Length: 150
Image 1: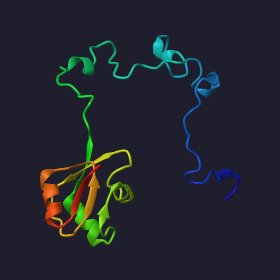
Image 2 (image 1 turned 180 degrees about the vertical axis):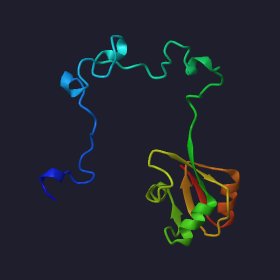
Image 3 (image 1 turned 30 degrees about the vertical axis):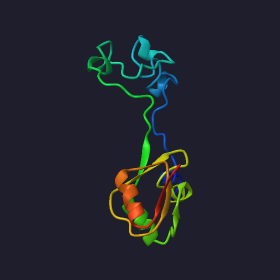
């Protein structure tokens, strides 16, 4: 290695672009590769999102239908087989409530939880949640447990 072949370490430099608008001698002076006149040549130019050069934009061309119910409640579903898995892994023994759901990342503290009936539950559990499906409630009670609605 000598002064003629020095170069920065691999990955240490990022910007290998030519610096724009730094005099004619740089090869990118004058218009700084922006062409002549027009909005795109100005500083501060930014086109609107979805702008298609004056053509009717896609979001206005496609037909709109349906509606979004602002009062809809979004439930985080937890199935019976998931509860059984928690029992098998020794995470829970007798009670399952929001703290257990949050600790095991089945729901966040602000979500509302609904227990769903997929799989089977063999363990006797006291399950506390916001909602239960009829099959889930029946399965919990059939296993000798208790379904408590928040």
